[in-house]
Structure formats: C-alpha cells, structure tokens
Length: 87
Image (tube, rainbow, N blue to C red; front, top):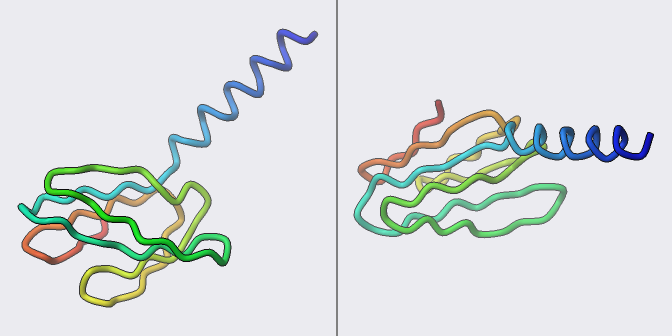
C-alpha cells in the first residue's frame, strides 16, 4: 500500500514539472524577464544561450520590451535579437 502511494506521489511530482514554461535566450547578451507568480515578483536573468524552466502553475511575465503576457505553464519564450516570442 505504501509503495503504491509513494509511486503515485513521485509520478505526480514528475508530471508537474513537465508542464513548466521555458525560456531560451538565443542572444549573445543576458536578457531579463520579470516573472509574477502567486503574487510574488522576481527577475529571471538568462545568460547568452541559456534555457530555463519556470512557471509551473501559471504566471505573468514582463518581456524585455515591456509587454506583459499571461502564461499557463506550457509555453516556450524564445528571445532572439532582443525580441521575445511565445511559442
């Protein structure tokens, strides 16, 4: 019984991370996104060529140009030429 419960919890935890949004910086310089999740704001600095996962349960993101976008957690933000595109 306990083994089944532990396996179910592990499967749920692993499945939750599969739905995180991701951001990839294809520029040669660091780019910053402002992420608001659960009422808390934080800066997410992406170094050149870096890819990160964030926003597993929905959030708002302020893009480098100042636009505010709502994410559900399944999107990919691609930054290239200083411009962010959501895919």
